[in-house]
Amino acid sequence: MGKREDSFRKAAKRYERWLASYCQLDRRALVIKEEKMGKSAFAFLRGTFFRWPYYLKAIEPRVLKVPSVLCVADIHLENYGTWRDAEGRLVWGINDFDEAAELPFTSDIVRLAASALLEGSNPAALSGKAAVAAIEAGYRRGLSGRPQPFVLEDLYPSLRDLAIVKGKAAEEEWEKIRRDGEVVARKLGTPLHDLLLTCLPSDTTDVRLYRRWAGLGSLGRPRYVADGT
Image 1 (cartoon, rainbow, N blue to C red):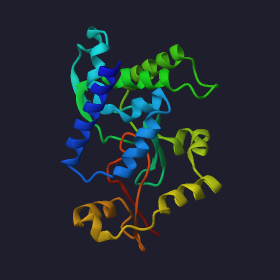
Image 2 (cartoon, rainbow, N blue to C red):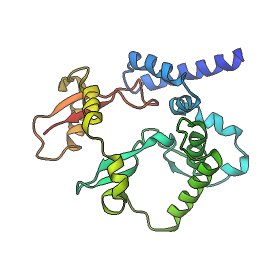
Image 3 (cartoon, helix red, strand yellow):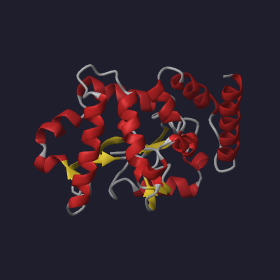
Image 4 (cartoon, helix red, strand yellow):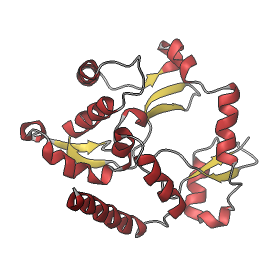
């Protein structure tokens, strides 16, 4: 057990050294990440995508003998969310592609199913077998038709109402974002600052920048959000 634990810690340190060659790591966030990962197997899965190719070695080989494509890679149950499209409609789907990688296409299915098996906190959730069957059925259904966005506004009003954050929950979310105060634009550098501005409507005014603390796998990396009116 000791050797296996040491092996993981060494792999984690190697990953952090590699990541630090691309961005300035937030050591405070890394401490929080380690604490969160220790709370459940699901949280551990979310925070350790860098080890996923290693875990895949335990999968039945024939499952991985398929074409490799650009996968979401770090897919899991909490990697889905909502956003507004160009027309202002609420769209639901995968909202995190920062670990995209070329892998056997079955990797995404296996990882999503693994996350469903590990996340058992909701007593009303599907059983493990039913959840895996639903994931497979949904994947097959998605391949059978023309790719299109999952627009809640048009066809799924009840899901839209569930997805909209409002009232006290919305206030708490904004309080969390603004907790550490605004970030001075020059600290981000011109390229990143300009990229954030492209994500806002062209007529946005009074733009403010904040550091964003969210997720688990990306904790430790610099993340920012732009807000305006």
